[in-house]
Image (tube, rainbow, N blue to C red; front, side, top):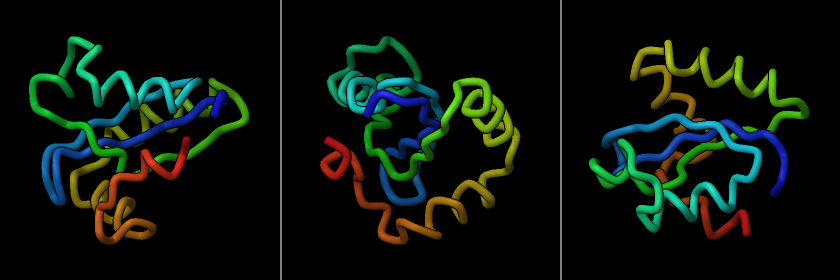
Length: 95
């Protein structure tokens, strides 16, 4: 899936959330899951892909990422639960 994507990872249902951006979602989520990125997701074990959105252009994906990072937690949870109420890890469905 080589196209701009904004995504959310969670440690568990209603757990710690992380919002990211990538042009290669499969590779990036694999990196998070395998702790290849020395960042927040490694420290807090945030590895489950619970939501993502594809974009045609990187600039629109970047704008969406910035928008979501400003949202309050309740809005982010509502966005996840609209399409993934069980907070299932979506990673197996994208590769």
